[in-house]
Length: 335
Image (cartoon, rainbow, N blue to C red; front, side):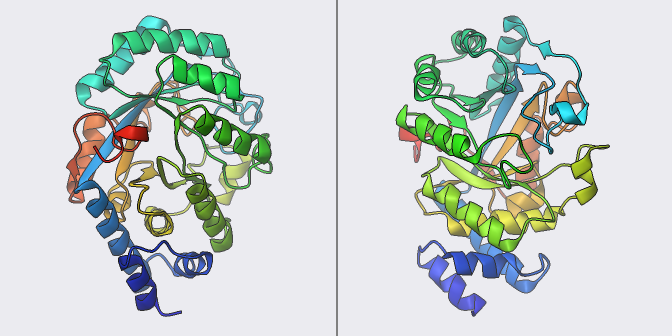
């Protein structure tokens, strides 16, 4: 398979096939072929967004030991990082969201652990919604939901959700892959935009696994896709597997962009990094409160980036910034 033929197909507006994705993912990340894929992904992402990246910002309503026991998560009971639950007050949550709004975040995400009471999530979300400008987008990051609950999420003012079928779901997590897929369908049926990602990538994941997940994310017609590497939680069993480099992450981000149809204009990576931005990522996240990749209770004091710091990273790799509500969700896409 000739890399230049693959790039010509991409330049003609075609999404790449499974075999082509596997081919690109099989090169060493520093290989000329990988750098060529990164350049092509960067060209596509900037062309689709007029060179303007977005920064979305997430606050966590709680941290708690979680019985879902995802091996890669700081909240997992099995990992023993957090042993007691902490919840934000409504005043704290609104203050975080309003700061994101002042900083110019293109969307505000509200995250909970899987066992957070759903009715309380709705109540808190209504308080946050009332505290923000009407045009500010709210995005939910919650556990698997029924169609009825997905509709309630829409009714209290959310435009979309983040939800992912994670790599090796049901093996490295205590969750059912079919339940994850069912939730994705429920969110879409309820009229919510769905952002997703190929995550959390570790060195053990094969090119075939990654290609299949890229194609799965494309199949759900997402608001954006992308890729994120696994951040090892010190002292956990899965940490012994190690982590991939930012350069390998950038390669996967680029190949994910090449596997998406052009109507999906968003391409994310996490955690924010200049190599990701150079390889076609046009969405980073700022974070406050609890973080499933951090052992600090307040990730703004640990791994979490701010909206200004995310913008600074994008600036370093040649991106301008979109101002206003995200273009990636629903009818706002392309505005």
